[in-house]
Every structure is written in C-alpha cells, then in structure tokens.
Image 1 (cartoon, rainbow, N blue to C red):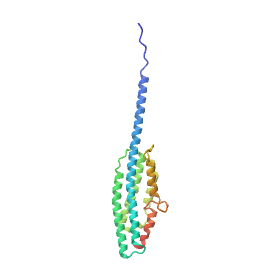
Image 2: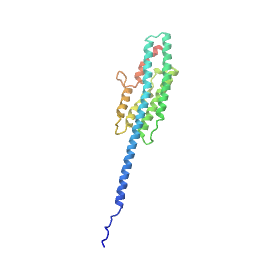
Image 3: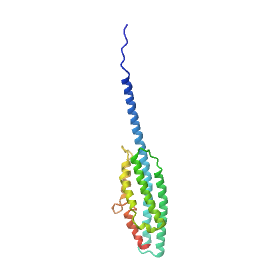
Image 4: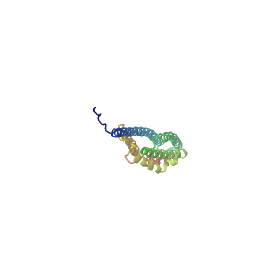
Length: 211
C-alpha cells in the first residue's frame, strides 16, 4: 500500500498570505490618507479664496471712495469719504468673520499636520485683517498707519500653504495655491505687497489730507 505524499508545513503559506494582506491594508490606508488630504486642501483653498475676495473687494471699494472724493475734497465730500470708509470696514469685518469661522471649523484629520499648519497660518492672517477693518469701522484714521501683523501673517501663509499640497496632485492644487500667493503678494506695480499691506497703506495715505 502506497503512502500519501508528505505535505510541507503550512506556515510559509500563512505568512505569505498575511504579508499580502498587510501590504493591501497599508496601500488602502495610504490611498485613504491621500484622498482625505486632497479633499481637505481643496476645501481650504476654496475657503481661502472667499476670504481673499473680501479683502480685495474692500480695498477696491476704498480706492473708489478715495477717487470719488478727489484730491481736495470739500467738507461734505470729506465727511462722505470717512462715512464710506467706516461702512466698507464694518461690512468687510463682518464678512471676514464669517469666512474665517468657516476655515476654523473645517474638519481635518489630526495627523495632517501640514494642512493644520497652513490652516492656522491663514486663520491668523484672516484675524489680522478683521482687526484692521474693525479699527477702520471705529475710526478711519487707523487705516492710515501700518499694520505689520497683516504682512507678517501673510508671509507665514506663503511659506506654509504650499507644504499642504498632497502628492500626487491630480487636481492642480499647487497651481491654485500659487495663484492665491501670486495674487496676494503683488501689487499692480509689481512690488511685493498684499492688498492691505504697505501698498494699500500708501494709497490710504492720500486720505490724510481729507480727514
């Protein structure tokens, strides 16, 4: 009677299957982490653009108010200019608080530190602008002085926001972030300045003679 062939130990097969399962699990975790980070950064970019649009709109309206007042405004034009600046500042501060709160409450996974850092940097920048407009709403004279915290927080955003971009980047988030950085970091003359930093304050200096 022939004996049945001896089977080898089963552990190599078990070990191999376990390794394959571990690789698949790790791959799934990596993909899930990438997908979540991509979604987080995409939403952060959208929210930042909303916030930046408030700042741009406000500075454009301020420039229009200055132009309408003229170089030598009458007392009535001077008062209207100051009233306009107060209203622009108050409205903008309110809009920025809404935009900032949306960014603050954006849900992020705790291990996505580059995204957290970028978000915190922009929240600080948004808050600096809120303070700027709050001051203008209370007293337009505060618009005539430098607010270095606006520029310093912006420089931190410029440094940290690009680091949040996931790799790979099929949705061109890096390009969208670069557009935000470029738009926010150059004045019409090409000088480095975000609207609201030295370039804006130079424009608002024209109000000294009107106030």
